[in-house]
Image (cartoon, rainbow, N blue to C red; front, side, top):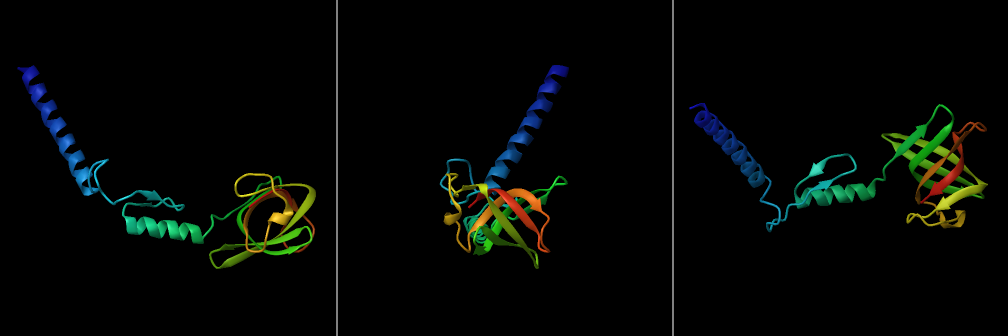
Length: 157
């Protein structure tokens, strides 16, 4: 008798789980492989968009705003990601990073041993960098001057 009751409870539990998964699939617009126009896109902010209109907006906004990151470790190592080149003077780059309503302006001093990489990861040079490019810089915090500066070890477009 307990076996029959256990089987009945298991059957009801399975039915509830199965019906909730079916309703979830229907709410999302169908099953995998069905002819639906909905796509899933995860933006750089971590938001997931499920409709074509929203995914197009996420892609457009991701292209317009580069990922910005600024880290200064306690040992003086610096990482600037998403820095826009605003000036090139000899071997010194001026880069700007916008954070909210504030602009952070850095001097990037390139040295004889600075390594350059293109956006594809290939070896590059200082001549490849143009005003307006968005770059990633890593190096050591420089203590000369009133403006924050980094002595670049790596520069990547």
